[in-house]
Amino acid sequence: MKNINNTNLVDIFKALSNETRLNILQWLKDPEHCFPPQGTHMPEGESFANCACVGSICDKAGVSQSTISNYLDMLQRVDLLESRRYGKWTYYRRNEETIQQLARFIGREL
Image (cartoon, rainbow, N blue to C red):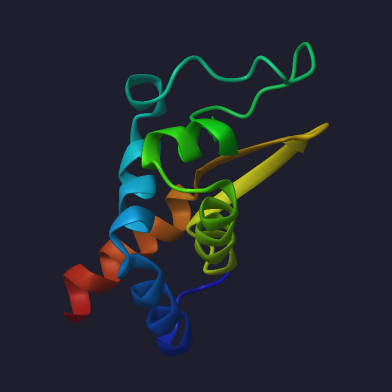
């Protein structure tokens, strides 16, 4: 996790300036409520809590998988999401540490 600086902030706010990308972060705040049961493709004993697979995110957003993949990649590049791959399945969850840093910055500086 890198500390947020002005360069990161611009990229973070660009990532948040799209309604679907913002929705993804909101949905992943409570994935059990927003998505069908997840993790069926994870190996026995493996845990990546509070996540959703690309297909579920794509279905909920109602846009193409290539668009969702681009959105998820952008959110991950600015450290707002973490991912884990299991075979051909990729799961995403929020990076709460970065989100908390952003919240502190907004509360303190803006």
